Length: 235
Length: 237
Image 1 (cartoon, rainbow over the protein chains, first blue to last red):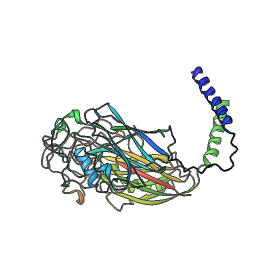
Image 2 (image 1 turned 180 degrees about the vertical axis):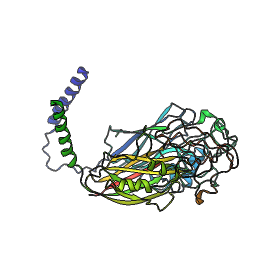
Image 3 (image 1 turned 90 degrees about the vertical axis):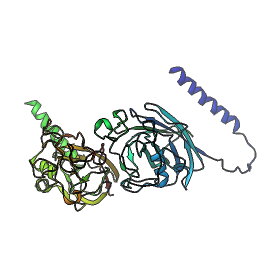
Image 4 (image 1 turned 90 degrees about the horizontal axis):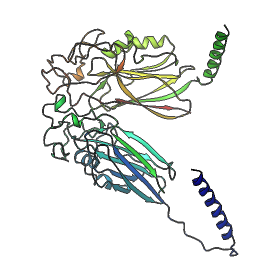
């Protein structure tokens, strides 16, 4: 620890010397320099806190001051596609998205994945992140329209997320309606046969807890929070 | 003797310090129902002195709280907080607050009423309610968000079948808007109450039969996970 500190101090001293040496320019009119591009990069780590709900490849989008869903409002079709089938491609390609990134693979229980998203010369962006709990009809977790302008380089924000219900597909848990490995059933279906309002998720019931037609077992049950999210600005 | 004197001095100092933070405030308060399928009965929002509480976890419910939690009747609580010079808004949503709906109201608080409490019964439940208990209203202007959990008043067994809302009457009250959303003919989940104090609600069990089964509650729609409500408080300049 002490050595590290000394090393740090000597580095500072050295850079002063270099600066002093450079500060010797007789040219009164330096050539005008175009402003350098500034990159803003964010490392997003999503960790799965559930016991039996793999998370679909996470979708990350940077955009202006807007939200991509709202509790009490109908889900967009892009969100429906993500929440029913785990496909984030529409979600990260919504009009107005400045930069996006996607996870490479589903995230298993206990596991995490880190993706990086970068914009250039856009200091005041907002981030939206979403991932489906794949052994459900249309459960997802995420944040939307979260401002990043006050996050300094090297700073990290951490939050844990509740599970939301896209409200676009009834939570029947029936065989053939759940795309995850518990069922291997259908993903996205344009029909909306539920409340058509985004809400917090009531949880899955499972056959073990009294929903006879459910393809799920107690292993797929979850409670809040279900996801740990860490965002670090790296440049 | 000396100790007692010291104590009284400390209390006096504490009061002085407190009075510096007890000025009146202008608040805008939004309560949003976050659930998929639970209705909130008339909501009581009240700012009061911080040494008062509408309920406390681990303590028996008052009869006024029981009337709210079992039947959605907030009149007793309203009378009680009025007697304490609280600043109160009763029933801002004008009836039931639907799943995912929000209601917004303003509240002017008097000096000393620095704690905010919010309660409303959850339907269909036997004696479940949303609760914010003596949340200290921040002095600094700004917008603050608080998430509320579902509590069980501990005054009625969670049999989950149709019944009455009067204190002591078993079963769920079913007002007309919920008539078609609640089942019939359930045999009753339980007739036992194992914790007679206010506690975190264990959640609805429900079943998958609208007619018969053991519960009149739908297990895919009328369950919940905490939190069940979001409260947004804006403190004016």
